[in-house]
Image 1 (cartoon, helix red, strand yellow):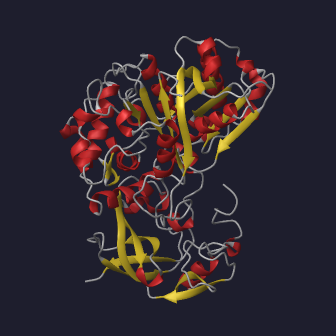
Image 2 (tube, rainbow over the protein chains, first blue to last red):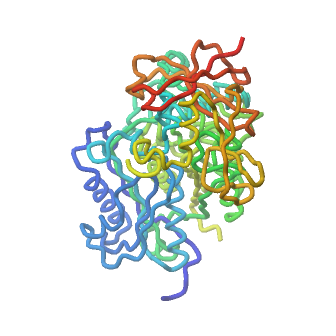
Image 3 (tube, helix red, strand yellow):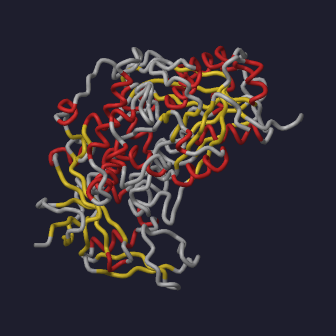
Length: 389
Length: 139
């Protein structure tokens, strides 16, 4: 083994169209193989060269199921981030980073695929059985309900104004309006349209909620040095982290503390420490928006605003490209581009920094990707146009 | 879905089996460490406070305060579909170290911080075959 790499970068991305749930013409694994092929083509390498596989949550598409059809020459890394929900979506990137920096693997694909025909309804697939009898006996058995409980306390107890939730939804749909590939393209989410949309679980409305889509995405990471050889637009991973902050966190049947935390304090703190960047340096956030309430909690925990000024900071104008203080979800995100359990956010981060986003942020250098908020653990990854080291 | 999380698999072997047995007998029982006296909830095999495996159960009064609440409009749970919209509360039990329980709220009108009282309800098909507490705002 040669010298260990000192940096990691994205060499290629691949993503299928977002199909309406259950509407994919392909089975889940076929969709995924196509996305990996697209990422390999983008990186200019044969797919058989990929030697590491990382995913998260409820993924059943293990690396060992992909190595055969990809003709993998040597399988050197295969791992899943534990925890239900999308908490590990940026954590899978952290695993790839760990594998590459340690020298275990050289070319690692991070991926997620969901197709209802293969994995069933998303609310079952992503919740991974965490809603046990203490939930189900009382008619509570979905992420919308559990995250509705968190959101209600965020609003009623912590004082987050509902306007902050609406601003997040409107920014996402605004960006989708400029992305012809977005599922929510063409939806003009006016105040009236938002306020009159039906309740799913009070305090969450239809437009506060992510979608269910059939799709697959893959990102190929390798050493920064090699990525520079492969592509003229490497996107550097400055830092990533997985974690959960206590005093009480994990699978705890709503006994978490602090209850309205997004579970991103730990991952966020370590991303800032490792990269030397601060929230003020970030040009855009590809924010995981399972529902708008947890997304507000994530922005607070990651240091972009506080519970006290969230209402003032989280406005439509501040959250949109190109000129907002903190553009979020520049492709439309989980709410309006399409929901791929958060994997679409990392793809959009790469697009934005390559200058390929449908909602460009001129001169953008740093883009943060957040993992699913209010999961048993969460994660974050910070990407950049230049190697910050 | 199989394993420890599944209500149908060897229910009596679950770490929280005494909780459900208690509800069936009209008593709210919460786990507590016999060594350091810390309330340990949700129930588990090891006390996170002192590391003891010697955990017991204590009966507490079925009263608490609303910690959070939702009103479900979409019929996520088939057995509850005929009830939509229905209210759930997350109830904090100050008398049990702040342990929190999810439950159905009947009669509505409860906000965060309000006091609620639990009623023991027998197991039914709706409640996944489990005895439950339902909660009502105290006047």
